[in-house]
Length: 190
Image (cartoon, rainbow, N blue to C red; front, side, top):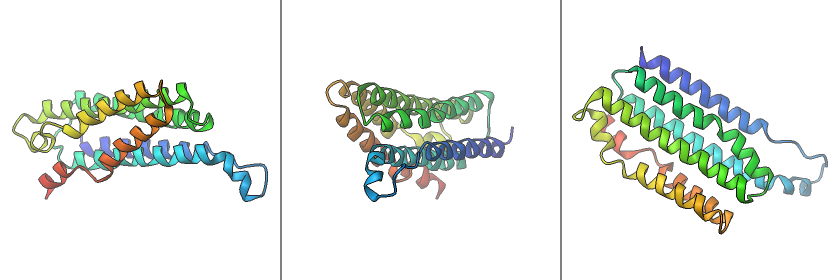
């Protein structure tokens, strides 16, 4: 299969995910600026999720710049990532509408952990296709950012039982770690 089809499909799914997230917003019934205040948790959750999905899209795009061959395993690994990303609108809405309480925050954290693990599996599938001496292998290296992200997500999930807001801060930390596109891949591309 041509990698362009995989990229186009992934781009389409991610575009739908972002669209679904914004459609979760319900307009307030009042006409005053203060009528927007109850929407603040939903809006903040949307912004965080938009950034996270955007980060996955940017890194997915950069990652596939190095892909030369696509295997069945890589297709399934990519689909696995898209599955976890497709749950983000649901967990975003649940967490935002319930003002960052325990179980919605835990569920959101589990969703983000699923995304991170799926991305790692996708990189491993690409390594299997391209080999240990490939540009992909050089770009991924030890994947410290990926491993650190998984650890922070696990800590965030556990922290929710102490304070859901600590968890949300940790979700933001992971987003900040990845906000700048993966330099390892950009170095190899250049």
